[in-house]
Length: 186
Image 1 (cartoon, helix red, strand yellow):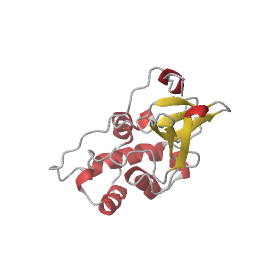
Image 2 (image 1 turned 90 degrees about the vertical axis):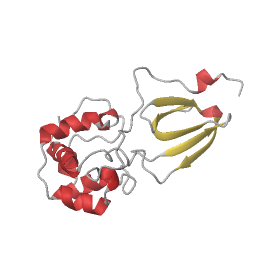
Image 3 (image 1 turned 180 degrees about the horizontal axis):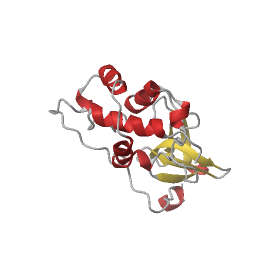
Image 4 (image 1 turned 180 degrees about the vertical axis):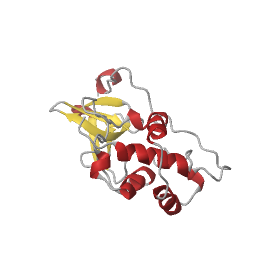
């Protein structure tokens, strides 16, 4: 393409990339250092604190992609009634192993442009001329269809599996308690 790079990748305003919280490889209490099956079993045995869980939902960047109330613009799977739709073990596994079960409509694709640029994410809007893609870092980009050379579906979730590595089992139980409390339409 002759088209400038600005026309092939337009970015909406006010979007900040997700920052994956750093975890301490020497802290035996943090999930990044623990066996996921053991974490799952232990988390399910704890009654977490909903208020602390809600705070963690924001702090851990969950809020960057997930909506939790009606009227919010969805950027990733909608969690408004996730506590009603999912069993606790499914919620824990979705957080710890996001690629095991990918939410419908949120398949990850890799797009390669004619300039060799790769864009990875899920399609939020598609017209005859362009495709809007929400990228793995939480920001959106619009691609001109004429510039796309390849489009390949991936078997991985866009949700980074490292997002809760810095949490303790107790903190993950708080986050689970918050997710379980999301039951209503609104």
